[in-house]
Image 1: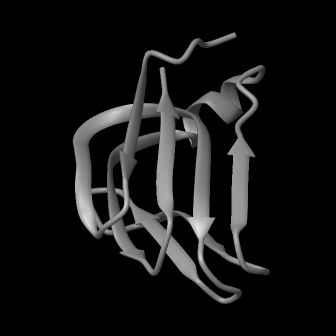
Image 2: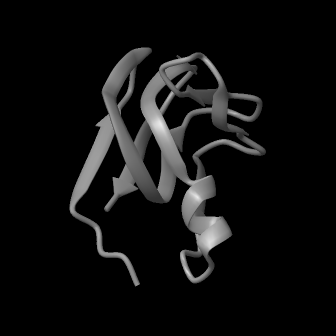
Length: 95
C-alpha cells in the first residue's frame, strides 16, 4: 500500500502543484452551507474531482484504492489546481 508523503491544501482558487502526483485521498472540510461546491482540475483544465455539499458543515472524503494497476493509473493527476471553491478547505493526500 502506498504511503502518504505530502498533503496539499488550500481554501482559495489556486494552483497547488504542476507536478504529476499520485492521489491517495481527497478530503474537503468546512463547507458552510448546503449547495457549496468545489472543483479540482489538472493543469490542462480537466476536472479530476468535484463535490457538492449536501448540508451545512459538510465533509467529503474519497479514499482511492491502490490495489489494482488500473486504480493506480486513474489517480495519477497531471498537476492539481482548485478551479472553484465556495467554502471550506481541501486536503489532497499524495504519495
